[in-house]
Image 1 (cartoon, rainbow, N blue to C red):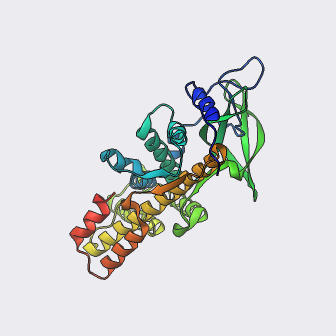
Image 2 (cartoon, helix red, strand yellow):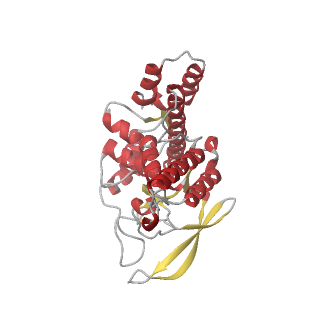
Image 3 (cartoon, rainbow, N blue to C red):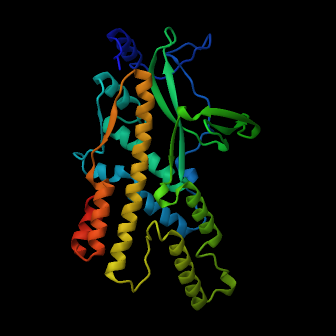
Length: 337
């Protein structure tokens, strides 16, 4: 693949010195314009974290912390997660500058992005982002990108595109109209709950079952009896753990052997690894689009052994065969993360 000329890169890098503001509309000229299709209503990630019960909220918060790779990477600043190979220095600088929040810098910017991805994947089971390209006003030369989380309702899923229902609001924030926006799949970054864990459909089914359980602590105070309350709590915990059992349980019942406790930790580790692999596929999707924009053939190399699925399968098999001690299991599960 022929590399871009120095003149083109000089123009790109010059535009990157300025904020991403402006448009190609007369009277609103600035440092370029973009090709954004879907304009989601503003909503902080925490707004999507409301769960059906305290048990559900606690479980998914703990699960998110295990899935989020930025937590362990922040602890060890020398530890890498992925690397870009077979790309020019200018490509690398462009990717590093725009992959993640523009409010943070360098390595922290990428970690912030992965944190957001892990939150959406944990709390919603799916994340769809629009790859928004920025172009220079004068030459239509691509020079920057943004990853915009699409928070609108997915109205229809077509073979080559997504159709979203975008709410139109007035000055008071009231919805006055709904606009259908169609965006090509090739313009989107899509992450879904891993297929090895049942995929997005299985995720939605479990979330529905959890919601139907209700709140563990939702008791009528006027007829509260300690014995009945304890019985209900135990029954709720048992049902909840049965629903999420193949992902791994956070709060295990008393009386379980060390073997089953560690085996459950292996399940949680597997869930974490599979979700991280899905996030890596998201980074690969970003690089694939950026390759077309910058006329290069860069590749992502996954460098962190803590998320090596083949190694996990070997360690789990060794554990099941009784050839891995509890102390070595503990080190692998919790230290290598």
